[in-house]
Image (cartoon, rainbow, N blue to C red; front, top):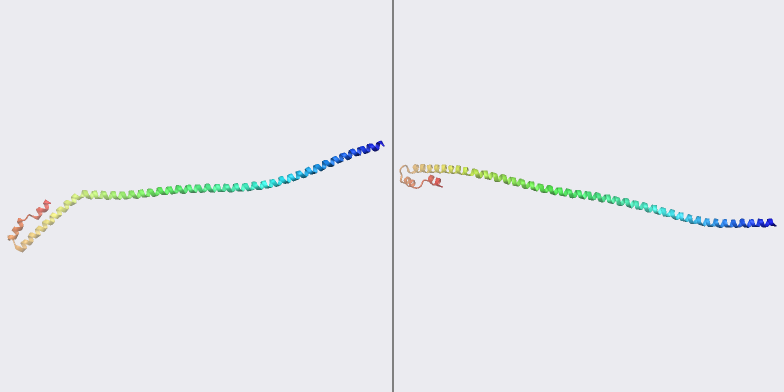
Length: 173
């Protein structure tokens, strides 16, 4: 009987070890399920994270494009402002040029008038000389007409001679 007890003792030990291994196996299966669930959760999180990262990258690209567009707009606006300033300067220069042209025309007119003024005394003298010549001719014509009408030595001729000479009056002016 000693053998049966030793076989039954070994059998109990083996059975206990087998039960312990089954318990450990069950615990490992539970742990495996937990880990599998955790892995699936992490995979889902990873997919969601990748999706969020992709969305964030897309938003970042859009924001970068907006920033580039804004910078381009600001460069264009600055160029337009600079262009408007240059156009304003051109208008001012054109106004100044027109003003100078007008001033030069006025200066030319003043110079012409000054030249005319300097020549004016000469012209006055020429006109006086011409006037005197005309007065003399007029006087000569009057005398000629009187001679033709009344003849020489008539009293009217003497009367007119007593009046001051027209030529003398013109010269005195």
